[in-house]
Structure formats: structure tokens, C-alpha cells
Length: 526
Image 1 (cartoon, rainbow, N blue to C red):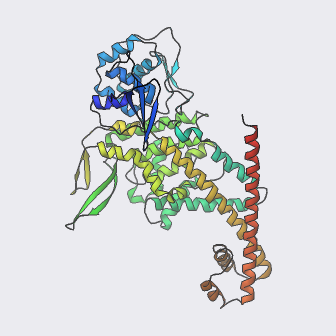
Image 2 (image 1 turned 135 degrees about the vertical axis):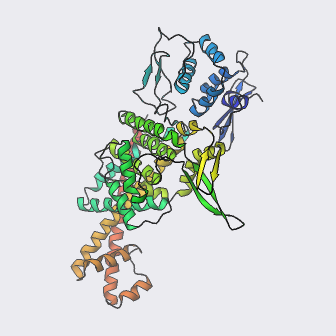
């Protein structure tokens, strides 16, 4: 079979890059045939006598059928015959795809093709908004008459495609639903109850984010991250702001005054058969010399997306937070800062929201999926990077230049993951904590009317009951029988069971309202 598009280019130019989700081959017939092999779709195109089997022609075919993939195009342009590319573009200079090839060559390499500026033609978007998340306020290139509507810039430009399940997701709906639900709940519960629930969720987010790093959540560490999280969205993101956040998150001895000046990796020490140890590298971050430029690009992208109201906040948060964690700009605290940035951006984009969705808690309960998403970038990096490690100094030297893998990752899977985690965090953690506070206050009111208890003992008894469906376990009952009669303990259980039952009924009534609203919407939908 004759490979086409990127499939051809990787073989012809001997480029090492991971497979795309779609492979292209020449096949018989006049229609596309798609065969699934795991996560890869093989697409067959009918033979076309006018199709040329050369690098520029196959790059044109790749962009047409497999999309603009910056990592691949950057590698192709490192090896392409510039004179051949120039001639190919000139043959059909007004073609949208060839203008895109021209623009991308000059944008990626900083070099100019020997082609005169276009004069008498209109501007076209580089990316089709039907297939990619794009900026409305793209930068116009007068030379090629291309509007660069990509999310980022040359130093930091993730791609997020509207393919597969992404096309079916309503990116604004999760946060809008959360805000609307809280407004509905405000009719039934007090501002104080909402506040106590949200305060608990800040603490839960803090603890979960620390546990994701597989570190102990000590009081001082929890307190530091808690205070940082409470300020999310209040101060513009700058280099100094990021340094301040990093210094608040990590112990003073590990705080930074600038971006890292050393190579950094994520890994673990493993025991060898002979009793020694070796470092098992899971991910090696970009070269230290690249960090400053890439972080400048990240902050530039962030500021540009702030002025793009049609970019969903979750897309913005995904692009910035995951680019940050892959750059790994600090010596410590990168993971926690990465998750902080999700909240910071969501608060910046929706300043009226006074709640936090504990996404770290959802991630902690889905760590295998989180690792799988991170590996969509880290595994190709580790497969292609060349490095040498020095056990004596506990350092590494990066020998290859793979910056395109870090600058232009595809974050489509990351967006799907964050959308799912936000939905889980809201529907399970946020609402459940609010309902718990309502139950607690209901039982507390009944207890106060019947028993004379200290606040500490009151809280202890209620929490024991609510965490066990309103009943004392045999062990707990024996313990409390030293202070209370069986009649009193039975009365306490009755209060707790009644409160739990009321909440279940309340949750059920809310679900019925949601169902009727969804049905009403579906009936009027086209």
C-alpha cells in the first residue's frame, strides 16, 4: 500500500514521531473506507493521477485529510527542500492550503520563502473553527493573507481539536449548571451553610492536590496551599505572580526566585538486583535554556485568551495549566501550581462565581486516567529524547533538541479529561458537601432541643451517625453507652435517620426538576 500524507512524510524523511489517530494510504475505490485499529483510523483514498508523490504534495494532502499538526509540520520543515516547497506554493499561490503551508514555514522557521506578498485576495483563517478551538481575534499576516487564529504562539501553541467526543461536549455547561444549581439551593439553605460547604471544599481541594503528589498533607503544607487557593483569580498571572505562588506552595528552603536553571524530571528511585538504585524517569522536562521563552509564550497565550470571550473557560484552563506542567518551570511545586491554575483561570473568566469545584479530589479518585492523559505527551517525549544521567551528581544532560514536542502538543484528550473531572467534582463533591451540611444542621437543631451537649461532643456524635447512614455501629454504641442510655442513643439515631431521609427526598425532587427541564428542552430543539 502506498502511504500518503503524514504517514508518507514520516517514512520518507525518516522522522520519528508517534502515530496520529488517522493513518492515510492509497486504496482502490472512489470513496473513503475507515478501519479501526485500536485508537487509530486507517483512511484509504482513491488513486488520483494528478496527485504527486513528493514531500510538498504529501504535506498538502496531510493538511487536507489529517489536519494541521504542528509537531509534524515543524519536523518536516527541518528536512524539506526549500526550493521545492517554494515552487510548489507558487504553482497555486491562492490555494488556502498552500498559503497555510507558506505561512507555517515562515512562522515556524523564521525564514522567508522567495515569494512575493499577496495583494489582491482576501484573508482566510489558518484553522477551521469547525474542527479546532480557535481565537476570534487572530493575527493577520499581510504577506500570506492568513489569519493566525491558533490558541498560542511560536513558543507555546497547544492544539485542541473538536473531534470525536469533544464535538458533543458543551464546554460552558458544567460551570453554568453548577452556578444555577447553587442559586436554586440558596432558596432552601442559608448563606452560612453554603459558605461552610465551600470552605470545606477548599480544604478538600488542598488535601487532594497534595496527595496527588504522593506527599504527606502536613498542617503547614495544607495551610499554605489553602491560602493560595483562596486568592485564585484575584491577581493577574505574571512571572512574578507564578513565583509568588510557587513560594507559598513549597517549603521556604525549596522556593525559587526565578525559573529553574537546571534540568528537571519526574521519576522515582528503583532498587537494582545487586542492592544499588537507579532512577526510573517517567518524564524529562524541556531544556533549561528553553524554559524562559516557553513561559513567556505561555503567559502571552493566557493574556490573549482572556480577551477571547468565545473560547470556553475550560479550554483556556486546559491549555494553560497543562502547558505549565509540561514545561515544569520550577524546581518544585509544579503539579500543585498546575492544578491551582485551573481554578485561577476559571475564576478569572467567571469572577461572579463564588464557589470552587474540587477538581483535584476528582483527579485523585481517577489517577490512572490522569496518568494516561499525561502520558499522551510524556511517552512520546521519553521515546524520542536523548540524554545522559550522572548518578554522582543526581543530574542529567539532554543531548537532543525536541522542543517541538513541548511547544506544540495536542491537548484534546486533556480537555476531555478536565471536563469529566469538573462534572464529577460538582455532581459528587460539591453538592454532597452542601447536602451534608444541611443534614448536620438539621440533626444539630434536634439534638439541641433534646440534649444538653458541648459543641465538641455534639459534632462528634452527629458525624459518627451521618457517616453510617444514621446508625451507631456496635463498637461506637458500646463506647457511648458509658455516657448515654439506650433510649437516648436510639433517639439520636432517629433524628439522624429522619434528616438523611429528608435530604434523599430533596435530592430526588431536584433530579425530577432537572429531568423535566431536559425533556422540555429536547422537545423544542430542532
